Image (cartoon, rainbow, N blue to C red; front, side, top):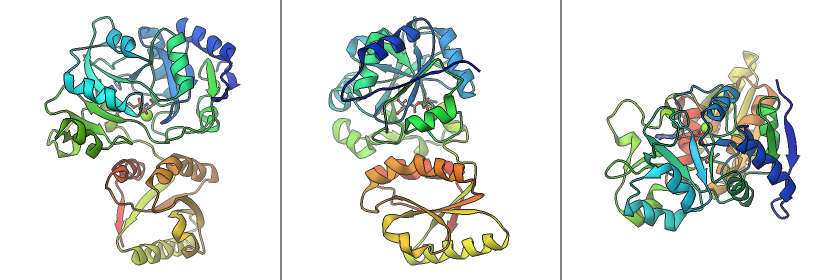
Length: 346
Ligand code: TXA
Ligand code: MG
């Protein structure tokens, strides 16, 4: 255990002293949790292999799982990546700063500890003022995975971060709720056409509108996933989780039935429902994930809901499925992983 400095920081009125304190920790090889528009990141100087190792230790994450390098401008990008294609330039112009991570060939100088041994590097420019000023003050290239303990849902609030990282990191910057709530889209620019490795707010459709057809990891017959992080159990609550799919009324009936069966077995059961169905689950411990018509709201609450059920100590969670179009692709990607692909047909 170490002493963790915890500081609240207001995005509307950023205290430059706090940024300076955090940046100097990073420059000296320490690790600092900071907010981004997607989820909280656990940052280290991208050029320090010792600091990268500290990240793996704090997360309990296997060190072959590469980190995303966060930059604040073009100069930062050029320090870590090479052979940047014109397609990539168009995407960056359109979507940076923002929730899109691009994979390039890495520069020699970037340590292999940062990229989990790969000769490629994932880079993103976050759209969050606190993250941006911190990255600039810290030297321009901050390697950061999501700031959760490996395998747990990503943190979307200061409270989540303190739960997971107090005593394990040098400093936590609590900047309130992460606005989007799901990790960035990851697009591998080293393949032709580029490959979508993780869906997110920047959807496949949005990318294709700019650069034409891309491929998806799922469509590749290639058995070993190219985003190495994808091979681990992910985003998972402690409870056993099931997605229930089918006609709306059947899904509701099925979940209520399963709830009653579990009650007989004395299993504590949680239900994840959309706002519109709140009253249709009279029995269980029900958490509302958002309105059906607002995928943005659902994405923003997803990890919060999983963590709330963890703290309630439920044994089993049932969740309705969502349409997989547009942002629904990212929502269902995370829910399926959280549920270890357990899907019940109603
Ligand atoms: O929104 C986000 O991307 C957040 C915030 C903090 O920026 N970060 C994040 O990092 O989600 P992390 O480490 O939890 O997820 C990064 C994913 C992992 O699955 C990792 O395997 C993959 O990106 N990745 C990183 N570098 C890669 C590379 N060179 N090639 C393929 N996959 C890579
Ligand atoms: Mg993660």
